Length: 274
Length: 256
Image (cartoon, rainbow over all chains, first blue to last red; front, side, top):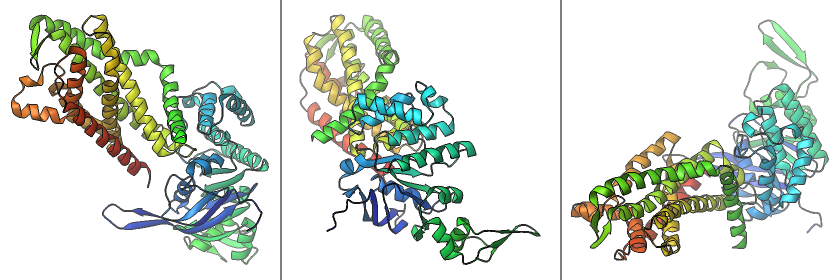
């Protein structure tokens, strides 16, 4: 036994199969294991349908895993969801803001689900709205907010319980470049405060920029886990790659995460030197 | 148990908070319809029919309809909140999905949903009963004795609604149970006339549907009609069945 406290998030040999209509099963996630430590940003990088969202639904304790376990601060999220999820903040891929409440009450209501009293919740909500630049929207209804602001509010809501782990499923999909950058800043700030972050994305630049560690996930399996730099070094031996971007136009550039991803998944041709 | 109660009450309170923002909307959408029925049938048709024989007991047609509208209100209010209300919360607002990844579980969310729908519909049914007390058709005591029937009846119809919401692929499909289940019950389960007026075979069919049992119990409590004991097991069998099946269907829909 070690006297170290358990990591904020540990996923151990997680597999998840869906029953198909008409019999049979589809394995969406196969034997996925990783850990996220405090102040770390961990990225699940993969294309649509790779199993990212299924993994996240299992981490939230919403889908039961077929085999394997998810531990939040050492507590199994499936056998003790109430205790485990006390330390979990989630920003779903879809907009799950409660449109029956205005911006502030949204946060206060959500805090109530975490045993947080109204007074503390009001305090925290105020601070979060300030931090997220939403103070002037405090009494507005959700419908009046832009997509970027809604997403920011959804992240703010996930932080109202001051979670040890913040989980975000494709947080910047559909946002314009400005809104993406604003959200990145907010995430970097949350992380500096000690929150462990797990985020799924199919944007290479986002993964490379935000994440200390990345799991490349494809067809439900993790192909490799490492820091972005080491992934590039490990899988692309060269300092330069060539790509024909238009007929007759060759680009030479430094290898990036996308090249690693393409090489590991073998899903695209045309880049020389992989 | 206390954890469960805490979780369910948080969900219930969420609904209550939304509800208090729009009480006028609730009053209009809940009471206008029964009041119109009371006026059109109770007063209008009542003037033509006068006294009728219900289950062997003479009662005024007005009192008969007033008591029938209690069960009808529980049906409409419970079903519509459980069907359309829950569908919107589950499908468009994703309220279930947002709450069920906090320390509150999906099971608690669904109990909260059903209990809220039941509460809201039961209060509406009691509201109709109160009108009957004010017009002198029922004794004030009946408001108290009606509480369990109104609550469990509403609970049952909320379960019917939630089950419809769980199976509906889109919101339009909720019209199927509405027209195939709710409307026939409304017309054939003794809201507007004693089911004894129906042919024997149809009477048996009417007793299969739960509104008949609710109406029978309501009339025993408000008008003193003979107690039909089998109404109790019918009500609780439907209640158990619909609550269990609606929860299971919703779990199947949301949790993969």
